[in-house]
Length: 105
Image (cartoon, rainbow, N blue to C red):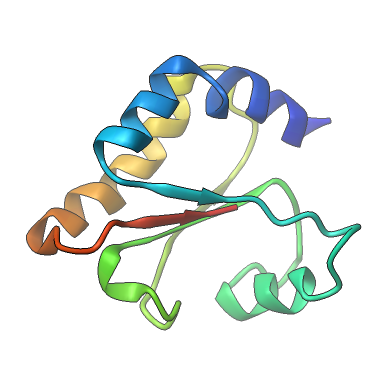
């Protein structure tokens, strides 16, 4: 239920979608029940407990997922709560803005 709550109140909002578009952020959603590769990937990027919802934001210089990501979890009832977590990665990527940052869920 927390994933759906975050999607409704923080991710799938006009404010978040506009922010993603303006900052060339690509959001990816991994469904554990439909893809057995999700759990190994979550462990590889640092979510060793495999808890969800879980968010990892990779800057444009980490397209191979080798650079450290900004990682967080939790329930977000407002777009700004989610954006406050994502903005540090976007700020870091402005140094080299030739490639868009990637947000992975």
